[in-house]
Image 1 (cartoon, helix red, strand yellow):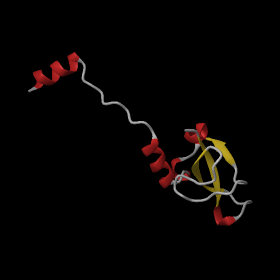
Image 2 (cartoon, helix red, strand yellow; image 1 turned 60 degrees about the vertical axis):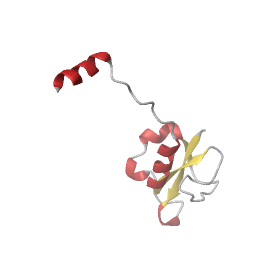
Image 3 (cartoon, rainbow, N blue to C red; image 1 turned 90 degrees about the vertical axis):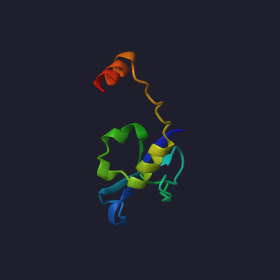
Length: 89
């Protein structure tokens, strides 16, 4: 699944500074937070996500995006770590 960033302007003015960035599926106008964006909204690749200040990314979109990411497999302790834990007790 490919995502894009779409801009939401402050004070509903296109000349104003961008208020928030929302995550949308590529080609869509519906943000992960369920806000409908306009097709004219400035769009950036989700690869630019790391360049967006956390306070400029919609919290609901961020939370939903994290829910959609594949979870990391649980790590298993190495033999040396397991032995150290047993010896610590």
